[in-house]
Length: 255
Ligand code: NAP
Image 1 (tube, helix red, strand yellow):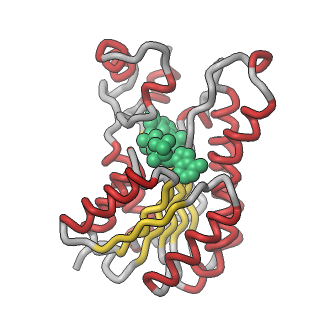
Image 2 (cartoon, protein in one colour):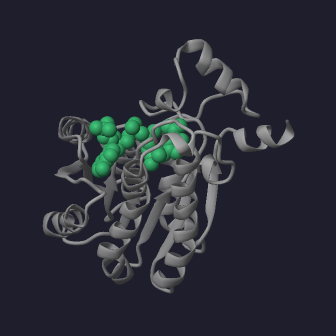
Image 3 (cartoon, helix red, strand yellow):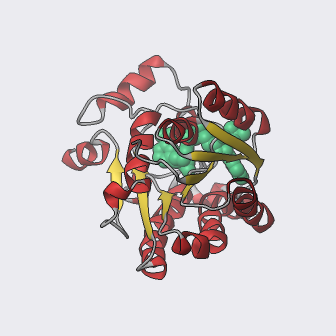
């Protein structure tokens, strides 16, 4: 028996990085997966990868910063597979690096909408379905939620909001369903280079060297944490945030 047999999972930002890794892993573990992304080409590729490994998946276009698409992704999943057991809100964007006085107000609206409003909207439209199925909602934060950095304060604030939202949603989904949050550290995905200037192998080694475990997080490490929260193995865990950061946060604390 696989860990997600008979479950249906909806994953946002599933066309790349952690969302892609979680989609592949959840499907291997028996889930039917709806791959939601606004990058149609990448999302459809992930569906093909899942089918090639013998799993079941379908793609839905969704810009998670907009209510109509969040509701659309939830409706599509129920129409396609009959129910939803797991929602993993993984979509996100980096902010434009800059001091607060250098940034336009529009940057706040965009980054908050994609990184935080999206979690609220996905929860809003899936909550009753998750309660019905004793399901699991998984949000995504960042180590930046705990230790924000100069030029990245907006990004940290969005991710801190997701950590707090997970606690409030845990209370609202209880006692039937659960909500938890994953805080990734520096993870080897297409997003990582956007956090630093002039990313190259040496910079990657320096970032890895700044963690206790001397490694970048692999997208599959985040997928494994999400699998735990998605599965019944975590049935007594709700309203928590977990760091998956190779010890990056603790290494910084030592300095
Ligand atoms: P990624 O590889 O860039 O994947 C993010 C996916 O979300 C991409 O497919 C992207 O499409 C999609 N997306 C962006 N905006 C969207 C929108 N409005 N609606 C729907 N989909 C959208 O990034 P990742 O590293 O896997 O990041 C996953 C999550 O982890 C994000 O929330 C990120 O903030 C968070 N995180 C990442 C790191 C890290 O070091 N990588 C660390 C901490 C937290 P495009 O490819 O077309 O942009």
